[in-house]
Image (cartoon, rainbow, N blue to C red; front, top):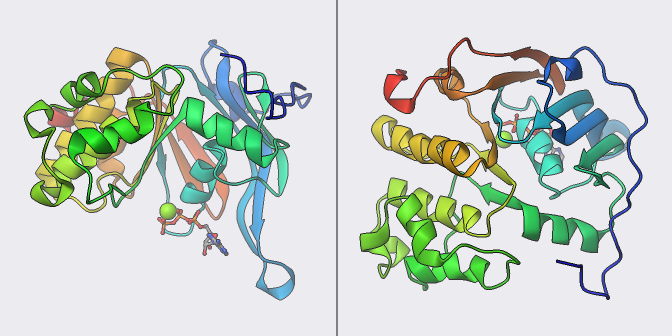
Length: 262
Ligand SMILES: Nc1ncnc2c1ncn2[C@@H]1O[C@H](COP(=O)(O)OP(=O)(O)OP(=O)(O)O)[C@@H](O)[C@H]1O
Ligand SMILES: [Mg+2]
């Protein structure tokens, strides 16, 4: 769909920097997201914190990527940049042929609204709205949404569609948040510690839903976790340390959540 006329178009210029060794680890498929020399500094002067330093990363369409790393290593900072919630201090970030690193507020808002589904640790549901109404909030403004009940079926919550969030368990609330994130049919599903507030068994159920969406809808998924065991579910595992990429691994075989143990 063409953007509304009052919004400026995306800058179309493509990156000119050559890929580095880390970026070259990606498969042949063209990257959906491409970061080169991506850095983020919070604050200025003595208070400046280099949260992300010179990160090169390609994320290909349909891939399931897990981001690992100690607290403060820059995981959320990277995810927020990938999702257009924030802008880098330097470096290039492109989504398909759109340059996000130089995009204005309106273009970033449009990018998030049309292409990105977010899932956070604490669900962020609206308590006065039912499950179906929480999901409808997103489908009402999306360009190509799936029906609300289809999204709820994907997370196995059809019987709960008319309940309020307070009537649901934590894992069920997180599945509503996932339904809300995918209902607009985003290319990207970005999850920041989606199981951080859940117990072991519930966390696995939620991960299973994310893995299934990645597999069945082909949605590119990037999931942050503290839990290295989750890494077995991924196509690639990126470890951050002190704002840099410490390693990129490709597990020999992608495990299902049922096969994971932690
Ligand atoms: N808005 C901000 N202002 C100043 N510093 C920030 C801000 N956000 C993050 N930082 C700093 O940037 C660094 C990276 O933070 P980030 O939130 O990306 O880490 P993380 O890997 O997600 O950690 P955690 O696992 O604890 O969530 C940390 O040192 C953090 O204190
Ligand atoms: Mg974080």
